[in-house]
Structures are given as C-alpha cells and as structure tokens.
Image (cartoon, rainbow over all chains, first blue to last red):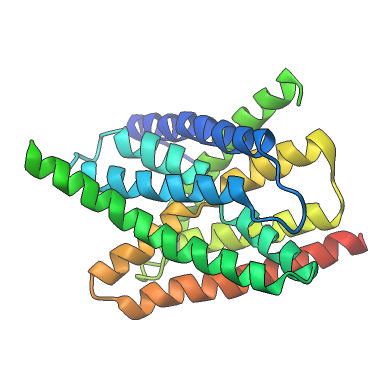
Length: 133
Length: 121
C-alpha cells in the first residue's frame, strides 16, 4: 500500500493518539475494577468522556484544512481509542448471561442516551466558546 | 501489570487505532453509502473477537493486553455515536437510528457467538 507523506503523518498522529487513549482506558479499568454483576463504571466513564471530547473536537476542527493532524490525533486517535464498543458489548453479554437483565438494559440505555447527550454537549460547548471569542 | 505489559497495551492500542482508521477508509472508498459501514465492520469484528477471547477464558495480563489494549482499542464508541448525530443533522434520521440499533443487535449477537465459540475451542 503506497502512502503519501500526509497519509503517513496522519497515521502517526492516529497511532500516538491511540497509545494515549488505550493507556487511559486500560489504566482506569485497572485502577477501578468492577466485580461481576456490577455497573461497568470504568467503561461507562471513558465512553462518556470520549463522546463529550469527540463532540467538542469535531466542532472545533470542522473547518480545519485536510492536512491538519488535530482531528486524527485528538479525534480518531485519543477519543476513538479511549472509548470502546466491544468492551461494552461483552459487559452487556456477561450481565445478561449472569441473569442481570434489568441492569443490562439500564446500562445499555444509559450508555446510548447519555453518550448521545455528551456528543451534543461537546458540540454545543465548542459553539458557545466560539461565540464568546 | 508489569511495565512491559503497559508498554504492550500502549503499542497495541496505537496499532489498533491505526487499523481502525485504515479499514474504515478502505471500506468507505468501496461503499459510499451514508450508513457508516466501516465503523460498523470494525465494531462487529471487535465484538466477535472479544467474545472469543473471553469465552476461551484468556486471563491475567494476557487478557488485559489483548482485550483492553488490542480489541478494546480497535472498536470505538465515540465515533459510532457521533456518526449517528451527524446523520441526524443531515436529515438522515432513519439511518442514524439504524446505525445504533443494528450495531447493538448484531454486536451483541457477535459477542455472544464469539463467546460460545471461544468456550468450545
């Protein structure tokens, strides 16, 4: 696969953001482990934080030129990697498998609803900051 | 977790992010539908893989590195939700809802199937 210099720089920016996002997520998960049948706090926290940040960065860099590395690093790299879909699915599965159907439904609904609100809040926050500038 | 384990998480996490981007870009280049097929494919593949790893009872540091550093980094929640928000803003609410609903259902099926497969190995 031939990559232009921009592609390579973009990939490097994504890679570095990914390193940070992964360490943050796994670090939090290890620092605050959740037992089986408990609310998956660590995953929930990083998913909400990442959604908020991504909304903000998406709005902030929307008009940046193509060559800008801000979104690859902060958006795709950090936010994209700080948050996780697979871990959430496994947690849902384990809750269901453990008979905690109510908790599973609640966790799923809260993740989606609050996640969406966080994305919107991030975008709105950037807009308000832009107006104030 | 040993220091080397943390290094592995970081290095693998970065690679997973890059892989996510490349796969999403490749799929988007081939199929230009408004439905975010690239992220969908990445997330479902990751759910399947994570189910497999969990079902196979990988444990300890190896589990943290592979599941957290690798697969967890590969899939993404934020991009998935932002995509639906943007679809809604573009007047494509139905696709926005499909993105959420189909990803959830297929994702859960994938992790469940992976888990069963991993246990059967």
